[in-house]
Image 1 (cartoon, one colour):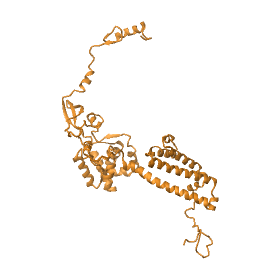
Image 2 (cartoon, one colour; image 1 turned 45 degrees about the horizontal axis):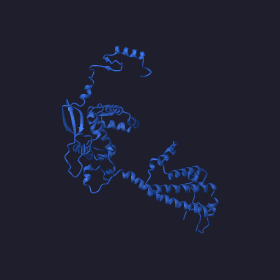
Image 3 (tube, helix red, strand yellow; image 1 turned 180 degrees about the vertical axis):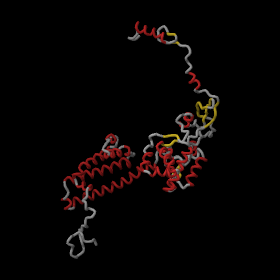
Image 4 (cartoon, helix red, strand yellow; image 1 turned 180 degrees about the horizontal axis):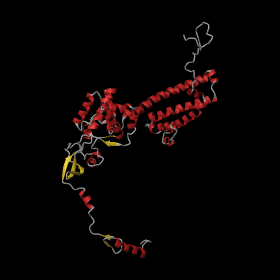
Length: 423
């Protein structure tokens, strides 16, 4: 019972019986109806089928995954992974059902309105091409006029990523592509044409046709797989092409396994160079700083010209260098490593964008934080020390005369000392 129960609510519920068909229960809380289940037929028919056929999916892959395809009236209704693969032997696990999400969605994509069935081109480009084609009468000249005009080129290039695709005929699409190839080869050379084809495992004929065409015209054939962005780029970087890798069943036959969890040429080599070269430069900087301070302290005229601000600057500069070297050594040589490219580097760049993001430094190691703090202090006192001269130079600095500190020439010096030729 609730506060809403009572004679008034019961009267309203009883009035509702006249607004709908069916039998209302004595407590006025349940409505009994007969029929009205036609909508359930959709769910029952969802899994109905006339036959089951074996197939696979050619989604830019080898097509090695076996699928049971359920068909009704010639239309794919649903699919399921097949499990009857040949045995690989009793000394290793059997295959699990194989298939990727892209392949599982293939039947939906087959009848989807988003499936591309015809050539499409950028609408603004098609308009300009058709106008130039009708006026000039030559496809290559029409394409050349568009691409060599900065205003027209900017017009269709700036439209990229904004939609605006229109359906065109196959003949026109082939003509535009051919005109672009001919103009590029004629104007810049065949090596400016780069292309790729479907992977050989999907279609040897398609791959061979595309590769042979690009090779015969003198173009550059790209790797057939690395542009998919779902495999490491190490293979194309090392071998010049994407190599075919063995499947997991071959792991049992391997005598040595290398688990590669990152792209070492891109990530590991960067850190290696940063640590090695950074350590060398850091040690050299510390040595140079020691020589500079020693000269400032031991040479009388130089020491007399050193102000208190300069002495403070040298102390802060030495501290900044020492903290930077210590952070590199402790974090990446002695410690387990720290990827500063996701925290310290973007924070440092944000300062020059005038949009500082201090939150990026919150999780950085203490030495990195102290190094950054000392650098900010150095930048603060910079204008009040002799370091400010590194940002300025006299107008005639590059044409200044030689400064002769000591001469072995016993001849009489020139009246304008410093302008005599060097010997």
